[in-house]
Length: 153
Image (cartoon, rainbow, N blue to C red; front, side):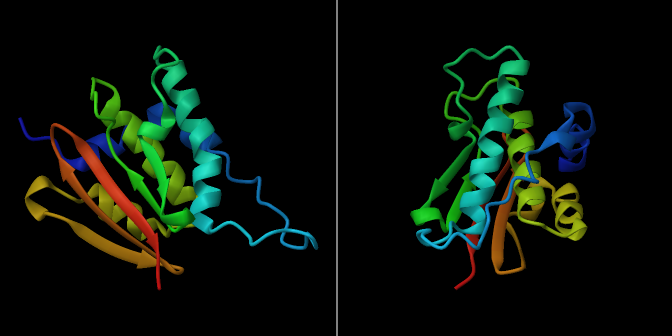
């Protein structure tokens, strides 16, 4: 039976994502501060604890790491969201938790979530952009969704 991404994204309501750590923004007026982290680095920092908490809440032991779902790369200029290599029954929902958190943290418009929800495996890789960010993603019924977010040049 074919399952659409919309069915997978519908799981957000049952996963309790309202507590995605979004209100802890860093102050931009710190005089001695180094270069400010990118919006993707900030999203990664906010979402790693949320994904890890979700994993622990589902009975995963300490060997399951949020970093396997959500990887910050290119000196903070990109995030890759994908199922961990070992897979498992909850890896696709874990990936959805990570994507939803990153979308919330980056201020993605509702249209981005709508585009994700409407993606099918037959559509191939999809792309969109907002506020200086670009995202590409694909969906497979067995593996769920995978995405790459980058800052626009």
